[in-house]
Image 1: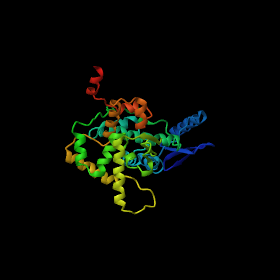
Image 2 (image 1 turned 90 degrees about the vertical axis):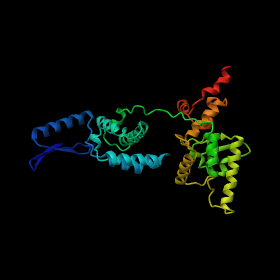
Image 3 (image 1 turned 180 degrees about the horizontal axis):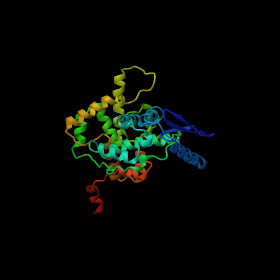
Length: 329
């Protein structure tokens, strides 16, 4: 059923059909209104009609932050990126979010941040839009982010520790941070995995560690070197001294440190050592590379690191050419 009514010198056209939400639009002349009605009716007959989307990017991302972000492992970072996008382009209606607009936004951002940062922001926006299309039934014809490229976004870090850098870190780091660094280099664990270790996760008889909460949501059990075992025992004694005989209601984490304090200690460590262009996550790259250099095969390293995809494991592997000289003869 279609209708047109005149209000304040303009023509409001409306189309109603069972199974569809009513849709309407206002025009300045009657002929254009009739033409629009016929176009909508044809699209309805073909099953191709998409109602006009009135949601803004801000409204989309607010719902995404409330319903989807809390379910994610990297919720904190995803929330930051979503919040930043709302400030930058939140006023834009989704119908106006075209590849051309996004390309202009990309070029403006690239003047102040790296391509990898822009790529991560676009990934957040793309995920929100895909969620809206698939799960919220927002009638968008496509995802415009998929049509925008960010060049040089996949430049991979290949930072390895220098000859003196490991010693410098262990010399200047606080005792707990020293043990975290050792574990990172001995086990290739992520920071989040290390900071969630509990005493019950360690099996000293088999010299293994159970990692239940992982980035990939797949638990794994890894072998421990003698150095890793010694480090874990040292941390257990340090925790016992800190508790001073108090028996907690719940089993405490082995490493009691807040993320803000962690960040302060890492910044102080880089400052005190003078080490440049090194991130804690680079220690995972270093550990995986050392495993390969020690002779472990791909499946063995993947078992320890938790990688499911060989391509992803390759990104973390940076073999030093000099380590291959002896094998060449």
